[in-house]
Image (cartoon, rainbow, N blue to C red; front, side, top):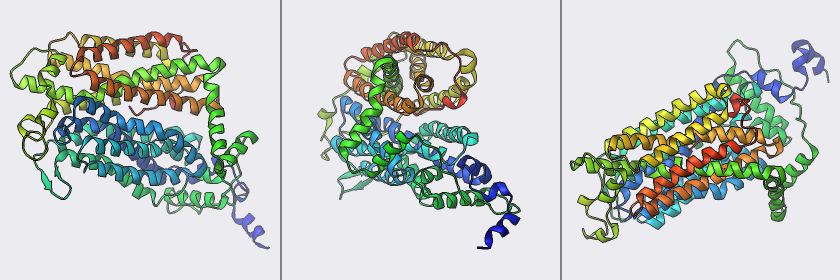
Length: 538
């Protein structure tokens, strides 16, 4: 009864009353706690990258162990993206209704388990199923981590935190070829008769690619649910406990204890609140599907139909090349290096591919163990494959920084048209160039069309109102990942027989995307804010 007068004497009036969450974040300061969250989030983004793109380094050296045809390589390189597409809506819905951490934590453990098990598979079908499950589970943290990270920060530091996590992600993309080189090119093997496999470096590489998921999950065991989500669910005491924990990590020893008595509930539109409560109950599947329909249908109606169609086509074309063609980049470079090792100095990329193809099924079982002859198999990747992959990732890291600096001054349209035209032209010219090194550099330029992903995302954010914005980005990126699947399988089906056609398709498609960019509404405006342009996972 008599505690209130005592508190009013010891605490400033502004802190003795409940405050808004934004003000509470300012009170907790920005320090060690925030840096740890940024590091964890960056590691999770890196895990998504390693799980989806790391397989490209495995395909050339695992073809004999798993008896993979080129078409099967295309399926295997795309199957993780299929898993992501199938589960992205599910995880997004569950994260909004069950909690961010509640989804991120178990899916990280499950992604690690499925990826580790995929390293022990013995044939194409087994590894395909396991890689699909890996994509299915890794989609959970991929779709949720930005929300989780952002909800520990106020508006003042939110963009800074997300860009910090993106920096960690960019560092991981540069390290990917270095990790692959340090593991895959080792010369050791271990027979495991019980499983009927020979454990080689490429299998270990798959496990290493999964380790960031496991490490991040272990760290998240000691982290709480996001305070903003807890407050939205009416759990004020837990919200205050999280804020006080943040303050203890961030404050200095001489700072006074955090004087926080309560946090005010944020205002929320009644319609949104009702939908959130209905989704949280989760009792009606029909209601859930109806809710998803009401959120998605407006994107394909009236004014938004044209916008959605243009953006989806652009993302499809970008991902078809930047991810689909990338999956065979190490393999193709390895074939070129093989030809150069035989003394062939002048050859086109496709002639090198044709000269190094062989029927894996005809070689199966020749050594009596159900595997192909070791003298005809690639157990290593040529060093040039790693070198040029490293250069590509470094170009991406530098390029995103440059685009972020110039986009407000130059505008989005010139950047899109320049990148699409340059990359598309290089894709077509690859067919005719018979200087291997020059062709490889043109291949590198072709793959840099991924720069356009973030620019198109910025356009998407500007073209839709707040209530449709997140779903618009989700739908357009879903079409992009569909492009990854189509691109990987397209290359897998055509590479050994119609190699030139793969480069013609990707090159001309990018040129077409450049033309289509002129029809994006409001594309001539130069008003992209810095927090709308962020590094996107290819």
